[in-house]
Amino acid sequence: MPFQRFVETGRVAVVSDGPCKGKLVSIVDVIDQTRVLVDGPESGVSRSQIRLNQLHLTKFRIRFPYTASTRVVRKAWNTEKISEKWAESIWAKKVAAKEKRLELTDFDRFKLRRARSRRNHIRTTTFLSLRKAASRNGTLYGKKTMAKGGDKPKPGKKVKPEKAPKKK
Image 1 (cartoon, rainbow, N blue to C red):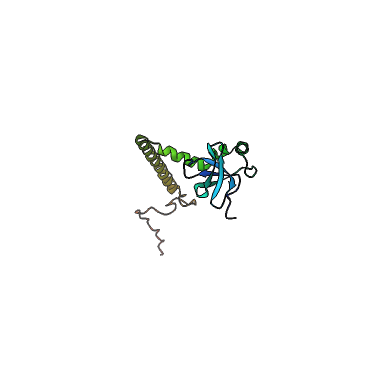
Image 2: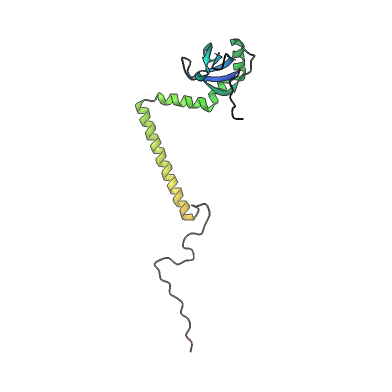
């Protein structure tokens, strides 16, 4: 099935535009193809209509009757623990990280850049030493092979050929 998030009663959404940007709301009723009635009892959004292109639908859905009151929506919201589930989601963590990055000062950005540089230097030196060790013992390309030069003579040294016994 190509779609998994439908505009339906009880669907939790994030407001993407307007004065309530970034807040969670629940769809209470579908007005027409472009507008819905939303309510955000725990996020401070009062019951109002909003355009669908101002919403981002989430995977969360709560169950309550069609056109339920704010009190019923709040009870269903708390029963399903939507605020806690949202805080644990990857989406919310990305939004929080973005906000945190925006609050960095110049000195904080400098410290972050230095820390990344040190981390990458440590990572690179460790990788190169491991690769060198793997090359030495023959496991660099995935299979254990005999070390180079096992039975073969070393280059640069001449091997004297065995002389055949003389016939009389």
